[in-house]
Length: 379
Image (cartoon, rainbow, N blue to C red; front, side):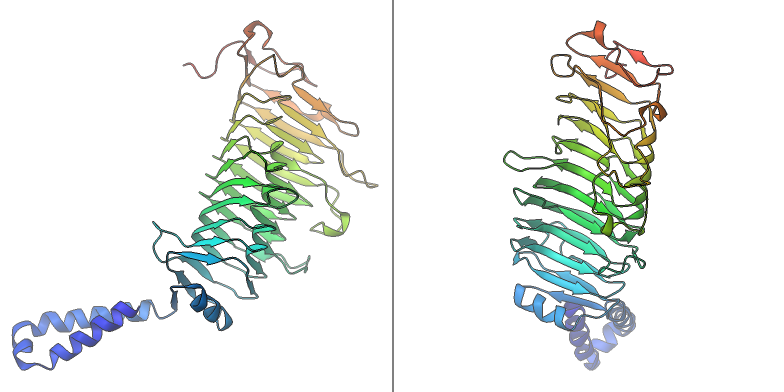
């Protein structure tokens, strides 16, 4: 914005020169009009270049503003509440600002239609990002979008998440990278109608990661697609989980998660590829699983309150699964209180790399049109 204003001032001075007007008057008038329009287009932009100006701008920030942050290092610890249609992004997407340390880098409470993009976050002791509904369980926050975020080294030990989401609907997390966290890469509690797409999760030694993505606490209608998990916690994808009943959204829900779609992801390493925990309906389709270290899937029930639905109704279809019998003796770990007979297995390709003749898995139900002993990586 400041460059545009400066250019406008210089051009206005030039227009007052008769010689200059005679030579380029028409072109100058047109250019001045374009600069004025550009100024109006950027009227709601706030540009900051250091931590001091960032904190000053946050004290007077209003809904509908785009906050552009210059490259450089910034401390963590920013809190924004009850502002809608706010965009916070890098001034230079190729060289994003880096928020280092603090408990949370950013905490947003009740910020509808928030957009965060091209930011780097690392070294927080709590969570990298914390996004919530301010405790108003009957009024979910709507329409948050997170894009091109780089988040690393959160924790490192304990329940500390890269991105913590509570009570959010119509959330989109796209093309983000998360490496090294203590709890979950992305933890969703009571979120609905949301999408996680094209993200990358990389676990690190000495970080106590339990999951890459977790959907629990009454989550529903969430799609996790086209992501890449490399040693992404004990359960790279945890469909469901274990939640204090007082934190469920909606209140009184009888499932940790339902209608969760996991498709077209690549999952490498970890003790299993995916766990289904207290979920009532999910699809796990078209994924590539490489070298799980103990099990391929887990079917568990960790919330056992009265009337709570058992883990059930999961479709596992058209996945490519490469494993080693030296590591995987039990393909599906089944816990008590679950309904494994309601699981459906269809057209999956199973390949035990070290013992191809032993590729056929032992499943809770007979699989339809499964393929065994052929490497799915070879055409």
